[in-house]
Length: 567
Image 1 (cartoon, rainbow, N blue to C red):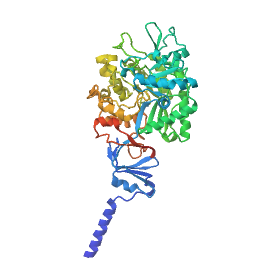
Image 2 (tube, rainbow, N blue to C red; image 1 turned 90 degrees about the vertical axis):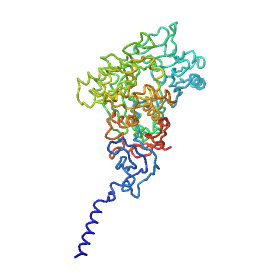
Image 3 (cartoon, helix red, strand yellow; image 1 turned 60 degrees about the horizontal axis):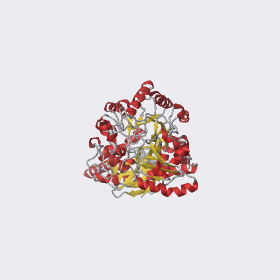
Image 4 (tube, helix red, strand yellow; image 1 turned 90 degrees about the horizontal axis):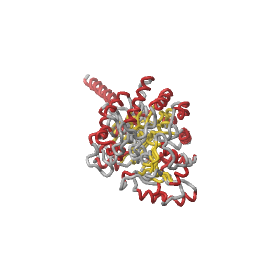
């Protein structure tokens, strides 16, 4: 009797053990790859930190502990020991100019360089350009970091390139420095009127100085021979290579021409482009636009989740003004450092309304560039008018790009209307040397106001506006967290009350960016069922000293489970 009872008890205990011990997963759940022994910051509320992930067919099938992930390892599973390295979700660059960034790799890169170095680079490029009959092109100069901080002149370029046209775009993209030959090619003289929405800077004698802002830039830029198709393709691939090297797995291309979009499709079809691009169509002209100039996109409609969700055309990009650095941002009151000047509005209320309405009817997101407080106010008003007329679908996710100077009373309107302030945190630390002189001590309280916007209920998709700024996301995260430039100035941060936390800054580069693209169900965090996009980095982003955030490097970049970059 006792023996029979013991057998029964043992059998029951064996049954309980089998019931509660995790059995190996089925063959259907065996992972293609497993990454373990990592420090995963998942940006997931359910599992904020993890040690390991399992990936199958480009998606995460498990996120959790080193012990549990063993069940997903089969004989053919690739197993990677991360040796304690930190892992973040694939970074989302929420505002850049993809083709321009790629093309910059073939031009003079003048980003924040001293004027003397830029002139030396032009001088070096001159013999080859003269021989080939080419223009000398470049981008990135910023007079605010020169001594003295003054706009340059055509005479400085004439001295080293007298008979070859030179066209150098300011870091903001809203001003160009040209030589006399470029003005001659464009037919610009003292008698040439300023185009609407732009300005030809002139000296005391009324002669062009060589500085053109906003729509005036097009007078020259339209004369520049376009890149060949082969050059454009190489530029798109060069951009991908650079972005992946930083751990950027998705890029928002803010202003895609139809030609560029079709070239992207070719490269995806050939398997050469693998990064994710969420594109916003533009008129193809930096001059004055109208609804008709967007006709090719409006007729085509949104193009979603092409090539296994690598390419989407989801929105249209509009412009309300210029930049603060070029004094072409549109302000409600005159510039503090240029009396009588309000900047350059790009559109009337009615013309912007017509374009946004057309985008809404065609099913596109609207994304409008607005820097000054007058421009932001105009765009909010136009968006509100359109959304009142066409309220469905309510989940519109309209965006204002930059949202740099906002009247305090307009800040709550972003969240109230569901409009996303798509901002670039590096702009604050780049502009701090001139921003307050432009707008004064009162208006600056609504400038680069990340904390005020977040506290009012907004989320902020983050980016760099590359090639306006360096595309480095870690320098951008550093700016978000510290409000300091890469030299650590000013100590404690510029208007430090507007800082983001490290968690918020990371969200701005991941899940908030995914939300802005309607992709939060598939991207932006490391979670079971989402696409396996992530980056392995060489420092612990959450715990390293603040000053080290800017120095983080990507070691491994993975898109849909495929390693596309390794250091």
